[in-house]
Image (tube, rainbow, N blue to C red; front, side, top):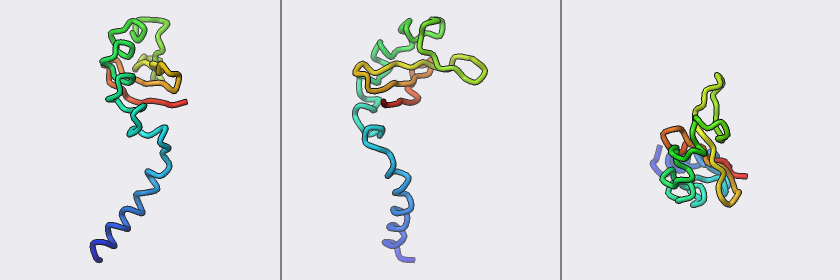
Length: 98
């Protein structure tokens, strides 16, 4: 098999996996990037050191596992466009856009 044909075949087989992610939901979009201060756990609003995100705070937006144990917390974006999800070490594990 020649190399160009093989490369084209691989490209067309893998393209559908990426074709269905909209730009708004893409991790390459700046509004979703961890490099964006809005999404960084270095921003105190998103920090696990902030009482609003503490697992000891009964009013925090906590995320629980199926056994009812807190696994992380959710922080709404200030512009209302979505939510960032963090674990208690301050690592952003996911995000959701509205």
